Length: 362
Ligand SMILES: *Cc1c(COP(=O)(O)O)cnc(C)c1O
Ligand code: SF4
Image (cartoon, rainbow, N blue to C red):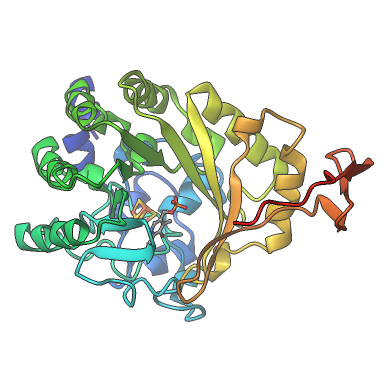
């Protein structure tokens, strides 16, 4: 499939040689009927880097890597919403989503290194080849400049790390030119699906724009390979704080044991687990959804049982654009002006007195 070790480690080679067709996947695994049918459906965006495909366990049709990468016919089920988070309604200018008062999400491109089968933005990801145009970028930056409340810009997509260093730098530099933008974040799945994208040249460019944070998406401990670890070490060594956003996916990572192993592996490569997402009610991904009670159970089994910084926040993205809502096990049992009653991670009950003085008027 590839000629030299250097090709394999070249992110552009990985990108150019992504698996897309039934014929290409057939060389790798024995496809199920549900997979064959889906690979013939032109409405699904499919592309998997040879690197990520190489992590598939060929003997397991339910392999967690395979389930994230190879489509199945259930994706045609028309349950759910095309745009569950009402992102299109919250878009004041093209390519910008403004849902919260002080931060915006900038869609830098609709291309990804891999099209995740569970993508919540699948309605618009993977069909247009081009990155944001100069004109749309100018409009987005103008909107940010005209809104002094915006102190945090999240550059996302698609995957911004499908762009060249120079194309990405143009976007980051434009955002950085706005004085009231305090922090820039990049959301990318490259360290998991095309780790060769993280090069010394890229991190040298990124670190010119500090404070810059990067959020990644690892969903299963098997994604944390030597290659992914090396990519994250380069980013972390450049002083870039790393966070992880995992999607809770039925049949892929829907157990306490997998989630615990995942967060432990993440902190070993200096990534702070940030969010654990309930899978959205987006059209085509109903088969991946888990009951909310599973997420609560996972949180219950993490808090107190492992390092505090290894624990993500479990969130449900409220349909219709309500934003992320944290969901926690119930630790506060009762609350009066004099005291609260709480339980700890072992289920032991404690009474905690309130101070005698009242809260100061605000
Ligand atoms: C998730 C998200 C953000 C960032 O939210 P944080 O909780 O600050 O990470 C911003 N804008 C949109 C539209 C989002 O979906
Ligand atoms: S990398 Fe992100 S935007 Fe791209 S397909 Fe995966 S989840 Fe969707």
